[in-house]
Length: 459
Image: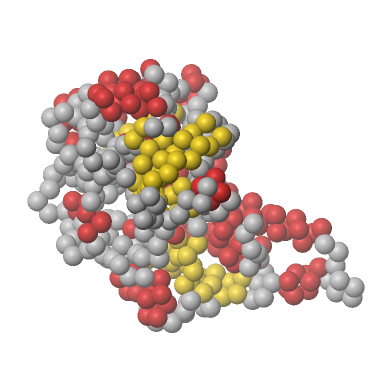
Protein backbone atom coordinates (compact mmCIF):
# COMPACT_ATOMS: atom_id res chain seq x y z
CA UNK A 1 0.00 0.00 0.00
CA UNK A 2 1.25 3.46 -0.90
CA UNK A 3 2.29 5.50 2.12
CA UNK A 4 0.92 8.98 2.69
CA UNK A 5 3.87 11.33 2.22
CA UNK A 6 3.19 14.88 3.39
CA UNK A 7 5.39 17.51 1.77
CA UNK A 8 6.97 20.09 4.09
CA UNK A 9 6.69 23.62 2.69
CA UNK A 10 8.15 25.68 5.52
CA UNK A 11 10.23 25.57 8.70
CA UNK A 12 9.59 28.14 11.42
CA UNK A 13 12.67 29.97 12.65
CA UNK A 14 13.93 28.81 16.04
CA UNK A 15 11.65 25.78 16.03
CA UNK A 16 12.31 22.14 16.89
CA UNK A 17 12.14 21.32 13.18
CA UNK A 18 14.92 23.82 12.43
CA UNK A 19 17.10 22.34 15.19
CA UNK A 20 16.60 18.90 13.64
CA UNK A 21 17.73 20.32 10.27
CA UNK A 22 14.55 19.25 8.53
CA UNK A 23 14.45 20.96 5.14
CA UNK A 24 11.74 22.49 2.97
CA UNK A 25 10.87 19.86 0.39
CA UNK A 26 11.35 16.92 2.78
CA UNK A 27 8.41 14.62 3.53
CA UNK A 28 6.81 13.65 6.84
CA UNK A 29 6.09 9.89 6.77
CA UNK A 30 4.89 9.13 10.30
CA UNK A 31 4.71 10.30 13.90
CA UNK A 32 5.24 7.73 16.66
CA UNK A 33 5.15 5.03 14.02
CA UNK A 34 1.66 6.04 12.86
CA UNK A 35 0.94 7.26 9.37
CA UNK A 36 -0.65 10.72 9.34
CA UNK A 37 -3.99 10.75 7.57
CA UNK A 38 -4.73 14.45 7.97
CA UNK A 39 -4.30 17.48 10.22
CA UNK A 40 -6.41 15.90 12.99
CA UNK A 41 -4.02 12.94 13.22
CA UNK A 42 -1.02 15.28 13.14
CA UNK A 43 -2.33 17.50 15.94
CA UNK A 44 -3.15 14.52 18.13
CA UNK A 45 0.14 12.67 17.64
CA UNK A 46 2.37 15.74 18.03
CA UNK A 47 0.68 16.77 21.30
CA UNK A 48 2.72 14.13 23.14
CA UNK A 49 5.83 14.91 25.22
CA UNK A 50 7.97 12.28 23.49
CA UNK A 51 7.83 11.86 19.72
CA UNK A 52 9.53 9.94 16.98
CA UNK A 53 9.34 11.52 13.52
CA UNK A 54 10.07 9.59 10.35
CA UNK A 55 11.30 11.90 7.58
CA UNK A 56 12.15 11.29 3.95
CA UNK A 57 14.59 13.75 2.39
CA UNK A 58 14.30 15.08 -1.14
CA UNK A 59 16.93 12.57 -2.22
CA UNK A 60 14.84 9.66 -0.91
CA UNK A 61 16.86 8.98 2.25
CA UNK A 62 14.72 8.09 5.27
CA UNK A 63 15.69 8.90 8.84
CA UNK A 64 14.11 9.13 12.28
CA UNK A 65 14.32 11.80 14.98
CA UNK A 66 13.40 11.36 18.64
CA UNK A 67 12.03 14.48 20.30
CA UNK A 68 11.40 15.47 23.89
CA UNK A 69 9.34 18.64 24.20
CA UNK A 70 6.73 20.44 26.26
CA UNK A 71 3.19 19.18 25.88
CA UNK A 72 1.44 20.85 22.91
CA UNK A 73 4.67 22.65 21.88
CA UNK A 74 4.57 23.11 18.12
CA UNK A 75 7.23 21.42 16.01
CA UNK A 76 7.46 24.34 13.59
CA UNK A 77 6.58 22.34 10.48
CA UNK A 78 4.48 23.94 7.74
CA UNK A 79 2.87 21.86 5.02
CA UNK A 80 2.07 22.40 1.37
CA UNK A 81 -1.51 21.36 2.13
CA UNK A 82 -2.65 22.50 5.61
CA UNK A 83 -5.28 19.73 5.69
CA UNK A 84 -2.70 17.06 4.69
CA UNK A 85 -5.55 15.53 2.70
CA UNK A 86 -8.02 16.42 -0.05
CA UNK A 87 -10.73 18.94 0.84
CA UNK A 88 -14.33 17.75 1.02
CA UNK A 89 -16.68 19.73 -1.13
CA UNK A 90 -20.26 20.61 -0.32
CA UNK A 91 -23.00 18.13 -1.28
CA UNK A 92 -25.85 20.57 -0.68
CA UNK A 93 -27.68 22.91 -3.02
CA UNK A 94 -28.78 25.54 -0.52
CA UNK A 95 -31.55 27.83 -1.73
CA UNK A 96 -29.61 30.88 -0.48
CA UNK A 97 -26.08 29.85 -1.57
CA UNK A 98 -24.08 32.95 -2.50
CA UNK A 99 -21.73 31.01 -4.76
CA UNK A 100 -24.66 30.00 -6.97
CA UNK A 101 -25.29 33.73 -7.47
CA UNK A 102 -21.84 34.58 -8.85
CA UNK A 103 -21.46 35.63 -12.47
CA UNK A 104 -19.50 33.52 -14.92
CA UNK A 105 -15.88 34.24 -15.73
CA UNK A 106 -14.48 34.81 -12.24
CA UNK A 107 -11.50 32.84 -10.91
CA UNK A 108 -12.23 29.15 -10.39
CA UNK A 109 -11.52 29.14 -6.66
CA UNK A 110 -14.52 31.43 -6.04
CA UNK A 111 -16.90 28.72 -7.26
CA UNK A 112 -15.57 26.01 -4.96
CA UNK A 113 -17.90 25.05 -2.08
CA UNK A 114 -16.17 23.45 0.88
CA UNK A 115 -17.88 21.54 3.67
CA UNK A 116 -14.91 20.15 5.57
CA UNK A 117 -14.82 19.97 9.36
CA UNK A 118 -11.04 20.28 9.31
CA UNK A 119 -11.36 23.70 7.69
CA UNK A 120 -13.80 24.58 10.46
CA UNK A 121 -11.19 23.65 13.04
CA UNK A 122 -8.26 25.35 11.25
CA UNK A 123 -9.85 28.49 9.83
CA UNK A 124 -13.28 28.86 11.45
CA UNK A 125 -15.24 27.83 8.34
CA UNK A 126 -18.87 26.84 8.87
CA UNK A 127 -20.01 23.34 7.89
CA UNK A 128 -23.44 21.73 7.50
CA UNK A 129 -22.61 18.30 9.03
CA UNK A 130 -24.22 16.63 5.99
CA UNK A 131 -20.78 15.65 4.69
CA UNK A 132 -19.73 13.63 7.72
CA UNK A 133 -20.25 9.97 8.59
CA UNK A 134 -20.48 8.49 12.08
CA UNK A 135 -16.80 7.52 12.07
CA UNK A 136 -15.74 11.09 11.40
CA UNK A 137 -17.97 12.39 14.18
CA UNK A 138 -16.46 9.83 16.55
CA UNK A 139 -12.97 10.97 15.54
CA UNK A 140 -13.74 14.62 16.33
CA UNK A 141 -15.03 13.60 19.76
CA UNK A 142 -12.07 11.30 20.39
CA UNK A 143 -9.55 13.93 19.33
CA UNK A 144 -11.40 16.69 21.26
CA UNK A 145 -11.37 18.99 18.22
CA UNK A 146 -13.23 22.06 19.42
CA UNK A 147 -14.97 24.28 18.50
CA UNK A 148 -17.02 23.01 15.58
CA UNK A 149 -18.78 25.75 13.59
CA UNK A 150 -22.11 24.62 12.15
CA UNK A 151 -24.36 26.20 9.52
CA UNK A 152 -27.72 25.27 11.02
CA UNK A 153 -30.27 27.67 9.44
CA UNK A 154 -33.18 25.75 10.98
CA UNK A 155 -33.73 22.83 13.34
CA UNK A 156 -37.02 21.93 11.66
CA UNK A 157 -36.02 18.69 9.88
CA UNK A 158 -38.30 19.03 6.85
CA UNK A 159 -37.51 22.72 6.42
CA UNK A 160 -33.76 22.09 6.60
CA UNK A 161 -34.07 19.36 3.96
CA UNK A 162 -35.82 21.92 1.76
CA UNK A 163 -33.37 24.75 2.43
CA UNK A 164 -30.28 22.61 1.82
CA UNK A 165 -31.84 20.51 -0.95
CA UNK A 166 -30.40 17.44 0.74
CA UNK A 167 -32.61 14.62 2.02
CA UNK A 168 -29.99 13.76 4.65
CA UNK A 169 -29.94 17.26 6.18
CA UNK A 170 -32.78 16.92 8.68
CA UNK A 171 -30.90 15.41 11.65
CA UNK A 172 -28.68 18.43 12.40
CA UNK A 173 -29.95 18.87 15.97
CA UNK A 174 -29.20 15.26 16.86
CA UNK A 175 -25.73 15.56 15.39
CA UNK A 176 -25.01 18.77 17.28
CA UNK A 177 -26.21 17.13 20.50
CA UNK A 178 -23.67 14.34 20.01
CA UNK A 179 -20.95 16.96 20.05
CA UNK A 180 -22.27 19.05 22.94
CA UNK A 181 -22.97 16.00 25.12
CA UNK A 182 -19.37 14.92 24.55
CA UNK A 183 -18.08 18.33 25.67
CA UNK A 184 -17.30 19.69 22.20
CA UNK A 185 -18.02 23.41 21.89
CA UNK A 186 -20.23 24.47 18.97
CA UNK A 187 -20.89 27.81 17.29
CA UNK A 188 -23.98 27.97 15.07
CA UNK A 189 -24.98 30.18 12.19
CA UNK A 190 -28.46 30.91 10.83
CA UNK A 191 -28.75 32.50 7.38
CA UNK A 192 -32.17 34.10 7.71
CA UNK A 193 -34.43 34.15 4.64
CA UNK A 194 -37.67 36.19 4.79
CA UNK A 195 -40.76 33.99 4.64
CA UNK A 196 -38.76 30.77 4.98
CA UNK A 197 -36.93 30.28 8.28
CA UNK A 198 -37.80 33.54 10.08
CA UNK A 199 -40.66 34.32 12.47
CA UNK A 200 -41.92 31.24 14.34
CA UNK A 201 -39.33 29.05 12.66
CA UNK A 202 -36.55 31.27 14.02
CA UNK A 203 -38.08 31.01 17.49
CA UNK A 204 -38.08 27.22 17.19
CA UNK A 205 -34.44 27.13 16.08
CA UNK A 206 -33.25 29.51 18.81
CA UNK A 207 -35.15 27.54 21.43
CA UNK A 208 -33.65 24.22 20.32
CA UNK A 209 -30.08 25.50 20.07
CA UNK A 210 -30.05 27.69 23.20
CA UNK A 211 -31.03 24.69 25.34
CA UNK A 212 -27.59 23.26 24.55
CA UNK A 213 -25.80 26.18 26.26
CA UNK A 214 -23.02 26.41 27.46
CA UNK A 215 -21.54 23.93 24.96
CA UNK A 216 -23.57 25.78 22.35
CA UNK A 217 -21.30 28.76 22.81
CA UNK A 218 -22.90 31.16 20.33
CA UNK A 219 -25.58 31.48 17.66
CA UNK A 220 -25.38 34.10 14.93
CA UNK A 221 -28.27 35.28 12.77
CA UNK A 222 -27.19 36.81 9.46
CA UNK A 223 -29.37 38.08 6.57
CA UNK A 224 -29.47 36.29 3.24
CA UNK A 225 -27.41 38.01 0.54
CA UNK A 226 -28.90 38.26 -2.95
CA UNK A 227 -27.04 39.35 -6.10
CA UNK A 228 -28.22 40.52 -9.51
CA UNK A 229 -27.15 37.17 -10.96
CA UNK A 230 -29.79 35.21 -9.07
CA UNK A 231 -31.50 33.68 -12.10
CA UNK A 232 -33.55 30.48 -12.11
CA UNK A 233 -33.02 29.94 -8.37
CA UNK A 234 -35.45 29.60 -5.45
CA UNK A 235 -37.45 32.86 -5.11
CA UNK A 236 -36.09 34.80 -2.17
CA UNK A 237 -36.53 38.39 -1.06
CA UNK A 238 -34.22 40.81 0.70
CA UNK A 239 -34.94 42.21 4.13
CA UNK A 240 -36.54 45.65 4.23
CA UNK A 241 -36.20 48.27 6.94
CA UNK A 242 -39.44 47.03 8.50
CA UNK A 243 -38.70 43.29 8.34
CA UNK A 244 -35.15 43.84 9.61
CA UNK A 245 -36.55 45.82 12.53
CA UNK A 246 -38.86 42.92 13.41
CA UNK A 247 -35.89 40.56 13.50
CA UNK A 248 -34.01 42.95 15.80
CA UNK A 249 -36.97 43.06 18.21
CA UNK A 250 -37.35 39.26 18.11
CA UNK A 251 -33.68 38.48 18.74
CA UNK A 252 -33.26 41.15 21.41
CA UNK A 253 -36.17 39.58 23.27
CA UNK A 254 -34.34 36.25 23.17
CA UNK A 255 -31.15 37.93 24.34
CA UNK A 256 -32.86 39.42 27.39
CA UNK A 257 -34.39 36.08 28.37
CA UNK A 258 -31.17 34.12 27.82
CA UNK A 259 -29.04 36.65 29.68
CA UNK A 260 -31.41 36.40 32.65
CA UNK A 261 -31.36 32.60 32.54
CA UNK A 262 -27.78 31.84 31.43
CA UNK A 263 -25.78 34.98 32.12
CA UNK A 264 -25.04 35.20 28.38
CA UNK A 265 -26.97 36.50 25.39
CA UNK A 266 -25.92 33.39 23.42
CA UNK A 267 -27.54 34.64 20.19
CA UNK A 268 -26.20 37.62 18.26
CA UNK A 269 -27.38 39.51 15.19
CA UNK A 270 -25.22 40.50 12.24
CA UNK A 271 -24.55 44.24 12.11
CA UNK A 272 -26.44 44.41 8.81
CA UNK A 273 -29.79 43.95 10.55
CA UNK A 274 -29.31 47.05 12.72
CA UNK A 275 -28.00 49.12 9.82
CA UNK A 276 -30.85 48.06 7.50
CA UNK A 277 -33.38 48.78 10.25
CA UNK A 278 -31.68 52.10 11.04
CA UNK A 279 -31.55 51.03 14.67
CA UNK A 280 -28.75 51.79 17.16
CA UNK A 281 -26.10 49.11 17.29
CA UNK A 282 -25.55 47.30 20.60
CA UNK A 283 -22.77 48.44 22.89
CA UNK A 284 -19.30 46.93 22.73
CA UNK A 285 -20.01 45.00 25.95
CA UNK A 286 -23.19 43.46 24.52
CA UNK A 287 -21.13 41.19 22.25
CA UNK A 288 -19.37 39.63 25.26
CA UNK A 289 -16.35 37.77 23.80
CA UNK A 290 -17.24 38.55 20.15
CA UNK A 291 -17.61 34.86 19.28
CA UNK A 292 -18.65 35.44 15.67
CA UNK A 293 -17.08 38.73 14.66
CA UNK A 294 -15.78 37.18 11.43
CA UNK A 295 -19.45 36.69 10.50
CA UNK A 296 -19.98 40.44 10.67
CA UNK A 297 -21.43 40.15 14.17
CA UNK A 298 -20.24 43.06 16.31
CA UNK A 299 -17.67 44.27 13.79
CA UNK A 300 -19.00 47.84 13.76
CA UNK A 301 -19.12 48.17 17.55
CA UNK A 302 -15.67 46.62 17.85
CA UNK A 303 -14.16 48.89 15.20
CA UNK A 304 -15.72 51.98 16.74
CA UNK A 305 -14.60 51.04 20.25
CA UNK A 306 -11.03 50.28 19.12
CA UNK A 307 -10.83 53.53 17.17
CA UNK A 308 -11.92 55.62 20.15
CA UNK A 309 -9.57 53.68 22.44
CA UNK A 310 -6.62 54.30 20.12
CA UNK A 311 -7.47 58.00 19.94
CA UNK A 312 -7.69 58.25 23.73
CA UNK A 313 -4.27 56.62 24.11
CA UNK A 314 -2.76 59.18 21.74
CA UNK A 315 -4.37 62.04 23.65
CA UNK A 316 -3.17 60.61 26.95
CA UNK A 317 0.37 60.41 25.58
CA UNK A 318 0.27 63.99 24.39
CA UNK A 319 -1.07 65.28 27.70
CA UNK A 320 1.72 63.55 29.59
CA UNK A 321 4.43 65.29 27.55
CA UNK A 322 5.58 68.74 28.70
CA UNK A 323 4.99 71.60 26.27
CA UNK A 324 8.12 72.92 24.55
CA UNK A 325 9.58 76.11 25.98
CA UNK A 326 8.06 79.17 24.37
CA UNK A 327 5.29 77.17 22.66
CA UNK A 328 1.79 76.06 23.44
CA UNK A 329 0.54 72.51 23.71
CA UNK A 330 -1.46 73.07 20.53
CA UNK A 331 1.62 74.15 18.55
CA UNK A 332 3.56 71.15 19.85
CA UNK A 333 0.72 68.92 18.73
CA UNK A 334 0.75 70.50 15.26
CA UNK A 335 4.50 69.85 14.92
CA UNK A 336 4.13 66.22 15.98
CA UNK A 337 1.79 65.18 13.18
CA UNK A 338 2.19 66.20 9.54
CA UNK A 339 -0.97 67.20 7.69
CA UNK A 340 -2.54 64.21 5.98
CA UNK A 341 -5.31 64.27 3.41
CA UNK A 342 -6.70 60.75 3.37
CA UNK A 343 -9.69 59.15 1.66
CA UNK A 344 -11.63 56.07 2.69
CA UNK A 345 -13.87 53.93 0.48
CA UNK A 346 -16.56 51.82 2.10
CA UNK A 347 -19.83 50.06 1.32
CA UNK A 348 -23.05 52.04 1.43
CA UNK A 349 -24.32 50.19 4.51
CA UNK A 350 -21.33 51.17 6.67
CA UNK A 351 -20.93 54.64 5.16
CA UNK A 352 -23.02 56.61 7.72
CA UNK A 353 -21.07 55.00 10.58
CA UNK A 354 -17.71 55.68 8.95
CA UNK A 355 -18.69 59.25 8.11
CA UNK A 356 -19.55 60.02 11.74
CA UNK A 357 -16.40 58.27 12.97
CA UNK A 358 -14.27 60.26 10.52
CA UNK A 359 -15.64 63.46 12.04
CA UNK A 360 -14.58 62.29 15.49
CA UNK A 361 -11.11 61.40 14.21
CA UNK A 362 -10.68 64.87 12.68
CA UNK A 363 -11.68 66.47 16.00
CA UNK A 364 -9.04 64.45 17.86
CA UNK A 365 -6.26 64.44 15.24
CA UNK A 366 -6.12 68.06 14.17
CA UNK A 367 -3.78 67.46 11.25
CA UNK A 368 -5.81 64.68 9.62
CA UNK A 369 -8.46 65.38 7.02
CA UNK A 370 -10.65 62.45 6.03
CA UNK A 371 -12.95 62.11 3.04
CA UNK A 372 -15.25 59.08 3.13
CA UNK A 373 -16.70 57.83 -0.15
CA UNK A 374 -19.70 55.47 -0.24
CA UNK A 375 -19.29 52.86 -2.98
CA UNK A 376 -22.34 51.31 -4.63
CA UNK A 377 -22.00 47.62 -5.43
CA UNK A 378 -22.72 47.69 -9.14
CA UNK A 379 -20.92 44.38 -9.73
CA UNK A 380 -23.26 42.23 -7.61
CA UNK A 381 -26.19 44.64 -7.64
CA UNK A 382 -27.59 47.25 -5.29
CA UNK A 383 -29.02 44.65 -2.91
CA UNK A 384 -25.45 43.85 -1.81
CA UNK A 385 -24.18 46.75 0.29
CA UNK A 386 -21.47 45.38 2.60
CA UNK A 387 -17.88 46.57 2.28
CA UNK A 388 -16.34 43.10 2.02
CA UNK A 389 -18.07 42.37 -1.32
CA UNK A 390 -16.90 45.47 -3.17
CA UNK A 391 -14.85 44.88 -6.32
CA UNK A 392 -12.24 46.84 -8.25
CA UNK A 393 -14.96 47.58 -10.81
CA UNK A 394 -17.06 49.25 -8.09
CA UNK A 395 -14.14 51.20 -6.65
CA UNK A 396 -13.06 52.60 -10.01
CA UNK A 397 -16.60 53.60 -10.92
CA UNK A 398 -17.05 55.48 -7.62
CA UNK A 399 -13.58 56.98 -7.19
CA UNK A 400 -11.98 57.69 -10.56
CA UNK A 401 -11.54 61.43 -11.03
CA UNK A 402 -12.35 62.21 -7.39
CA UNK A 403 -10.07 64.08 -4.99
CA UNK A 404 -8.53 61.19 -3.02
CA UNK A 405 -5.83 63.19 -1.24
CA UNK A 406 -2.46 61.59 -0.63
CA UNK A 407 -3.66 58.12 0.33
CA UNK A 408 -6.66 55.83 -0.16
CA UNK A 409 -7.49 53.39 2.63
CA UNK A 410 -9.30 50.12 1.88
CA UNK A 411 -10.48 47.49 4.33
CA UNK A 412 -8.70 44.14 4.23
CA UNK A 413 -12.14 42.52 4.11
CA UNK A 414 -12.33 43.48 0.42
CA UNK A 415 -9.32 41.34 -0.47
CA UNK A 416 -8.84 37.62 -0.80
CA UNK A 417 -7.25 36.28 2.39
CA UNK A 418 -3.48 36.71 2.40
CA UNK A 419 -3.44 38.54 -0.94
CA UNK A 420 -3.87 41.98 -2.49
CA UNK A 421 -6.48 40.69 -4.97
CA UNK A 422 -10.10 41.84 -5.02
CA UNK A 423 -13.08 39.64 -5.90
CA UNK A 424 -12.92 40.55 -9.60
CA UNK A 425 -9.14 39.87 -9.70
CA UNK A 426 -8.13 43.53 -9.77
CA UNK A 427 -5.07 44.08 -7.57
CA UNK A 428 -4.11 46.85 -5.18
CA UNK A 429 -1.31 47.94 -7.52
CA UNK A 430 -3.75 47.95 -10.44
CA UNK A 431 -6.06 50.24 -8.48
CA UNK A 432 -3.14 52.55 -7.69
CA UNK A 433 -2.28 52.82 -11.38
CA UNK A 434 -5.89 53.56 -12.36
CA UNK A 435 -6.59 56.05 -9.55
CA UNK A 436 -3.19 57.73 -9.43
CA UNK A 437 -2.93 57.56 -5.65
CA UNK A 438 -1.25 55.14 -3.22
CA UNK A 439 -3.67 52.52 -1.88
CA UNK A 440 -3.14 51.07 1.58
CA UNK A 441 -4.90 47.95 2.86
CA UNK A 442 -5.84 48.35 6.52
CA UNK A 443 -6.70 45.53 8.92
CA UNK A 444 -10.29 45.48 10.14
CA UNK A 445 -9.63 46.99 13.54
CA UNK A 446 -9.67 50.51 14.88
CA UNK A 447 -6.13 50.48 16.23
CA UNK A 448 -4.69 49.67 12.80
CA UNK A 449 -6.84 52.42 11.31
CA UNK A 450 -5.54 55.07 13.71
CA UNK A 451 -1.95 53.82 13.47
CA UNK A 452 -2.14 54.25 9.72
CA UNK A 453 -3.38 57.83 10.05
CA UNK A 454 -0.77 58.88 12.58
CA UNK A 455 2.14 56.85 11.28
CA UNK A 456 2.60 55.17 14.65
CA UNK A 457 4.22 51.77 14.00
CA UNK A 458 2.31 48.76 15.26
CA UNK A 459 3.96 46.87 18.10
